Each structure stands twice: as C-alpha cells, then as structure tokens.
Amino acid sequence: MNRYNVVKYTAFCLEILLCYIIQSTPGLTLEVFGGRPVLMIPIAMTVAVFEGEIPSIIFGVICGLMADSGYSGPMGYYAIMLSVLCYIVSILMENYIRTNLLTAVLIGVISIPIIIVGQFLLFYVVMGYGYAMEYFVAHYISRIIYTFAFVPVFYGINRFIVSKTISE
Image (tube, rainbow, N blue to C red; front, side, top):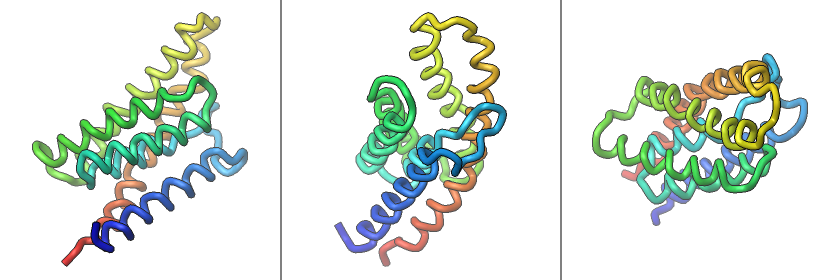
C-alpha cells in the first residue's frame, strides 16, 4: 500500500469518525419533522463510488457498525446492508457506470429508502407495534429525505479526498 492510499483511508476514517460523533451527539444534528439523518449511509455509499470492492466492503461494515451502535435495534442490520450496498455500488462504478454526481444521487435515491424502510419493516412492523403508518409518516419519511440531502455533500468531500490522493 502506497502512502497516498494511507492518507486517503485515514481521511475517510476521520470523516466517518467526525460524522459519527455529530450523528450520535444529542443536539448537534437538527431534528427535521421528527427525523434525524443516518449520516453513515451516504458516507459509505460515496466511498464505494470511488473505491474498489474490498475497501468498499470494509468501509461499509465500519459505517454500518457505527450506525447500528447509534440507533436502537439489534446490531448488524446496517453493517450487513451497507456492506452489500457498497459492494454493489463499487462493482457498478468500476464496470458499468461513470462516476459523477448524477449517478451518486441516483444510487442514493434508490438505496437510502430501501435501507431505511427495511429497518422500519424489520424492527417496527414485524415486532407488531401499533400505529405503524403514523410513526412512519412522522419519523421515517423525513429521515429518508434528510439523509438523502447529504449525498451531494459527502460526494464532494470524498471526491476532493480522492483527487488529492491520486498517486502519480
């Protein structure tokens, strides 16, 4: 591993750690219409846009475990979902799709609702809690939109990191 990769992966880890602290500290993220963003999803997704399969899976698992520890529910849901998402995104970006903001936004439009609605279905509906639709409308729709709003931000940050750490 060359020094550029070390710098790049260190910058990704610092970004993940900083956003985890922001996400999990009460009062640092605004609650919009009852929902707080899951910052680890757009971070993991945009890292996968620029990296290969193995680093993408590793960063997906790291972001997923951090998201699991920050939200209630059994450990492992976000880790599994983000590792699978990151693997698929890295394969698509390396072989089939051009890397740009539009494709990152489209992937976010598809993947963020799938992951967050999946969490709602597994940990709220399946558990048999009452008033599921009211809870979904009050908390989860705003969480999906709020999380999606960070995709262009993290795409720009990660593109900057990658562009400054390209080996010559």
